[in-house]
Image (cartoon, rainbow, N blue to C red; front, side):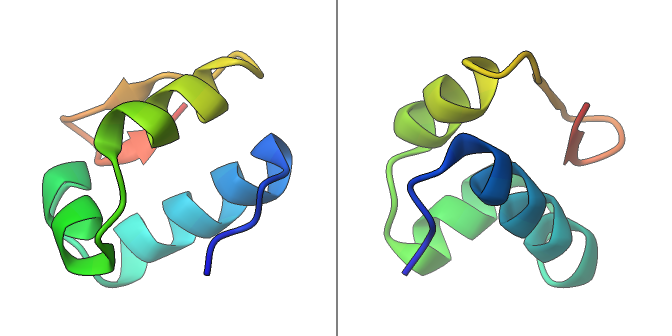
Length: 57
């Protein structure tokens, strides 16, 4: 289960991307979560996904 708080979500997702997943699509598929929801929640606090480094920055 992922946190609802966007700041905590940002931290958890970036950690998972760094340690376990090649990209955001793979993470979303594996965890059965909606990619658009993740992007929207994290974008609401000013971060965008960078595919080249596989992190929200």
